[in-house]
Length: 454
Ligand SMILES: Cc1ncc(COP(=O)(O)O)c(C=O)c1O
Image 1 (tube, rainbow, N blue to C red):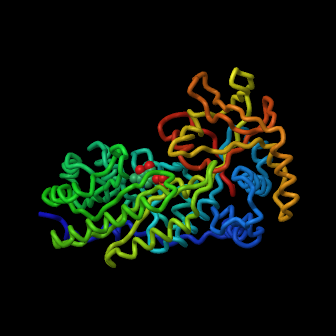
Image 2 (image 1 turned 60 degrees about the vertical axis):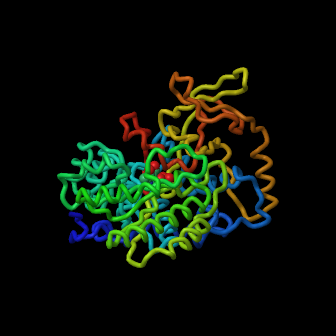
Image 3 (image 1 turned 45 degrees about the horizontal axis):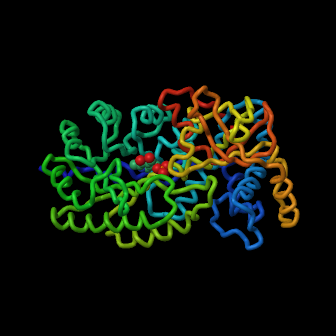
């Protein structure tokens, strides 16, 4: 028999999205800083282009990022932080996590946030996100360990990996998780002995011509999978999808939401049931070496599409990169320099086996600046800004940046425009909070962190 009449709904278990701890002090200072006290142009950059750049402000993207980073490095006394803690170093600013979560809540006010833990598996980040009142999505045992250690209520988490072992499922279940994801009939049997579990069916909406996605059942095959779950006595709480990390257009979400809602209407009628949840997955983009659409623009389209959802359906989202990336700044140091046939190479104390492990994945190419480029503070005087830009750009040459291992694949970036550098010089990369420290969860030596406000 289907277990659709089970008492506690998945939404009851998961809903948590109201601030349980009101943070004061540094958080308020930071937000006031960003939203009020800073000149409007700088504030808009820090808020991911919530306002368009002014017409006068046509500096190249790299220069706009440099100005923000210079202002930020000055504000947090990055020099002092590195003098105290050395390099390589990830400077984690938990206020920035809160700022991102607030922005997300403002733009998608009726959507429950479940942070994708794997994007930034760090205790201080988890505590800040938990204090904000967001929930968590997990995909591994290691992430559950971390949440448990941080005192997060595991019953409020959802497990979003559709292809896990019985041991992992049972372990997660014993620690309190009741919401899992399936995308294949073989997976369903793994929940047989576990009472009160509900599943979300993961859907895939590949664009025409895309290769088969790693996860998700096609919408046309989903009714059979839902049937299979119900016959196995497994409650189907709803559906989920993931449009892919760093998605720069609203159309994949629009298509997936439209397709999911059509399926929900069809299956609710066919089975005389009500689904509870549609989970929009992750994918919201941030700015690395290219501008991306503002969250406000993407969210408007998402909200318009969600307007067709039935009133009883709750909506969730699992942002990872959008919340985590702006929260950490990476400081590295040049350990060696060589002139090769293709130009100058600088070897850093951090590489693709460390914090740069995801460089290039999903089209995310982190920018790297010499610390010496960050000494000029942004001003509102456009001609002074143009003069600074010319001076900063003068003497830049495209270089190759490589990591510290003796591995020829340890190449972080090619053609990175940088000023003259020598051994010992510091480099700074913004937007390094997502999928950078994550490798430490896989057993590699973690890049040291310092947490601010500390
Ligand atoms: C199912 C699922 N949800 C959420 C996320 C987080 O994605 P992002 O960091 O792009 O927001 C991922 C990332 O891999 C995922 O696989």
